Length: 233
Image (cartoon, rainbow, N blue to C red; front, side, top):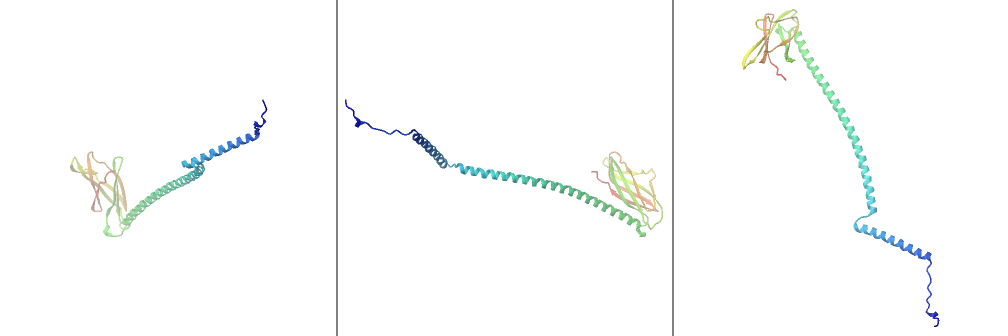
């Protein structure tokens, strides 16, 4: 049996280092290829991570801006509320001051008319006259205030008798109530320029007053003045 050298095939053995390098390179290519395929798939599916990240950044910035705007508007609202409260208080104080001023003006006008009537020198106004008559209910009792005047031109003291006749209805029928009563002596006042008389008018049970007639007799003549009974509030 002979040796057949010509049939032998000699193969070069690959270096282990080179083999490992090629394997690593193949692995890198596979990973890169996979990433490329993933990005391609995202692009085909309509999703882009970079674009999404950019959009998220813009959304975060807008949210931050909106939060800051909300805080600014809340601060402005607080200032506006305090300003409105201050204006409301100032308006209330001003309205109260104006009301007091109107009341003072009315009081001064009333006093002016009162003194004008007293200081008037016209003899046509000779004698006693009724300047004011008021009725006010307090604690279920009616209180009256009667002011009589005489012109300053008449330097004399006078006596005046006063009687109140309250006209109204009781049990559906007309009726009169007198103060003082007809059997009593009328109320008498003594004054020179003016008299401010106050008292109470007590109504009988079931009596509905409608008006009151004030009768004043002085210096030889009598005056009568009718006043409507005030409505209860």
